[in-house]
Length: 134
Image 1: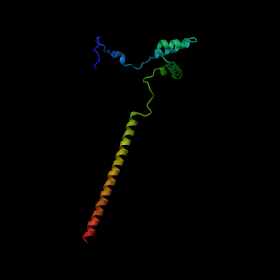
Image 2: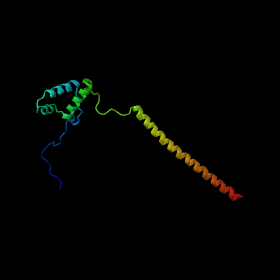
Image 3: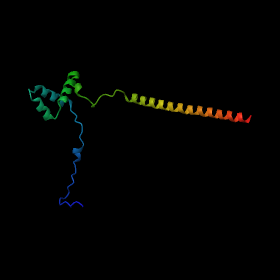
Image 4: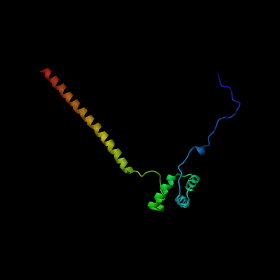
């Protein structure tokens, strides 16, 4: 039994494309310094309100304080998020080429073993043919 036709028109929802893609927030050095200064002046119980107002996590504030204590203002100006790569692009390329080289060497060894096997088989066939003629 088919569904009855709805009397509503245009029940389709079209999402706003600007709301679909969320991007990572980037904080300037000045902003981080201002938040650290505000957090330092907060009284008991006011820090949570500050973090909620600025939509921050306490771990972010802790990281900013640690970076500021270790390296000063330059510690707050991270250029890119994430860990530093352990190997350079050249080192990764070298590893890739070495892996390919070892794969091709194994393939060459198999081909050489096949040739040796063919030579031995041909030699055995020659001996069998020459032995039956005599």
